[in-house]
Image 1 (cartoon, rainbow, N blue to C red):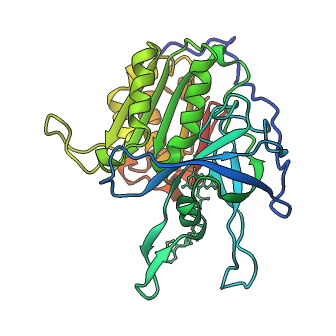
Image 2: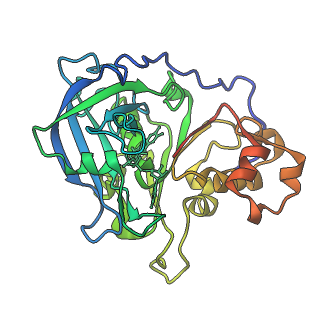
Length: 325
Ligand SMILES: Cc1cc2nc3c(=O)[nH]c(=O)nc-3n(C[C@H](O)[C@H](O)[C@H](O)COP(=O)(O)OP(=O)(O)OC[C@H]3O[C@@H](n4cnc5c(N)ncnc54)[C@H](O)[C@@H]3O)c2cc1C
């Protein structure tokens, strides 16, 4: 467990930058052109199909409009058979730093998982509209885009005041690829930890890229949590929050002093496990900047904490940033 030193009064609350929003609205999208579309799972044998896709938005109002952590809209072609209206916009997190993939904000990227399932009603094949449209695109294809979206899931204005704990599952890794590269690219020397949760090792995303960043930057720690496979020592599978609990002191050295900013992104519900780990690890006065918890929720068995219970019983504070979908 980290030290239980009281939070120094001078510790600044994270000041977030002013960001631009809805520069391009879904009703009047601009055209981006695909410049890259490639698999980004650790292996082609991964259980899911996930692709890193880059769009050239040069010459449009989207060029230079984003901050790391924001999302953009994709307008898939065609009509929703249920409503008879054009398909609605879908949001995708930016996977690149503020400067884009090219350093000038003209090429933006995201990480898309194909939504593939059996249809709940009749067992027919269910293919998500936008994710499969995006993953099928080839270099040179045109896409209708909007954005930027999101004004809170951002890095603070003054990055040197804080330490960073990023927890991702699945495509929740996208904004953290952008944020980690942004922080390291700006010379941030504060501790930065990324915990990536995935069902199988084959499904880790950008794995080699993060390992390489870790090798090059002493302040960056990259940890994985594989839930459906045993670890190298035959130990049980781990979820991201369980990896956090096991490595708290290393992953978030400044947590008890309120120095650490906690970012959670990925599968809806993952915030429940993180809330539980923080509640168990921190004394009340150190917990306050991260979350407050109702007496009822405190009395409930934490093993039974659900997404709904956390929504009702836990209020996340100014040092926690959540984007789950
Ligand atoms: C802020 C934000 C950021 C996001 N970032 C990313 C990202 O970086 N990468 C990413 O991949 N996604 C991301 N998403 C999710 C993304 O917006 C889409 O929701 C996702 O790609 C699925 O869209 P789709 O059009 O492929 O599926 P849709 O055609 O919209 O189908 C999905 C919907 O169909 C229904 N459905 C699902 N399964 C079945 C089934 N078996 N039978 C019947 N109905 C079913 C559900 O209601 C579900 O909502 C993000 C979402 C938000 C809100």
